[in-house]
Amino acid sequence: MRIVVCDTGPLLHLSEANAIHLLRLAGEILVPSVVAQEFGRNAPDRILPDWVQVTNLESDYYQKTLEWVKHVDADEAAAIALALQAKADWLLSDDAGARQFAQALGLEVHGSVGLLLWGAASDQFASPDDALSLLNALAGSSLWVSERVLQKAREAIESFF
Amino acid sequence: MSEYLQVRSNGQITLPAPTRRKAKIKEGDLLEAVVETDGTIRLVPKLAVDRALAEKYQLEDVAWAIKQKGKKE
Image (cartoon, rainbow over all chains, first blue to last red):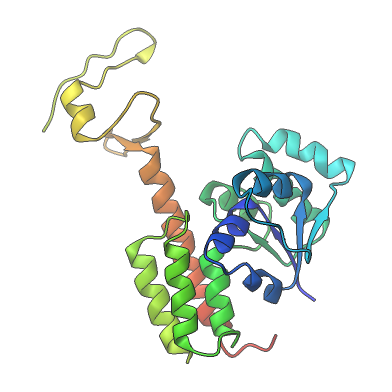
C-alpha cells in the first residue's frame, strides 16, 4: 500500500471541501503530531479521521526539523521529516515553499489539486460531475487556485471520462 | 510611471507613497529583489512570487495526473 504523509494544508483544504475521504483512497495516511495539533487549532469544529495515523518522529529526524524551520513552517518541516523517516511514496503539501524544499530532498510531492485529479484519473469518481463538483468546492476553500489551473483541471477531468 | 530613489546608508531606499499605493504595498510586506543581467532591479511582492510558484506546482500536478490515467494501481 502506498505510504502518504500529509502536512496541515491538504488536511484543511480537503476538509473544507468535504473531500477528506480522497486522502484515504491514496493510501496509508501518516501525519506528525504537530500537524494533527495544527489541524485541531485551525479547524476546531472538525475531527481528524481515525484512519489518519499520527506518527512520532524519531530523534534523528526531529533534530533535522529544528534546522529546517528556518526555511519552512514547523508542521511542514515535521511532515517532510516524517516522509523521509517512513520512506513515503508521496508527501502532500499545498505550500509552494515547502514543496520546493521537500523536492530538493528527493521527495515526490503533490498538492490537493493533484490528489483530486489523481482520484479522477484513477477512476475513483463515478462521473465527471462528481469530480468537477469537488474541484469547485476546493476552489471555494481557503486554498488559492488560479483560474488557469482551474481551467486546465476541468479539461483534464473531462478527458478522463 | 517612474521615479528616482536615492540609496542611503546601509543601502536603504524609500518607495514613494504613490508607488506604494499603485503597487498596493503595505508596511511589513516582503519584496523579492531580482537583479537582471542588464543591471535592472525588479521588486516583486512576495504574494505574487508565492502565487506564481503555487500555480507552477498546481499545473505540474495537472500534468502528472494526466499521466496517471490508465496506470494500474
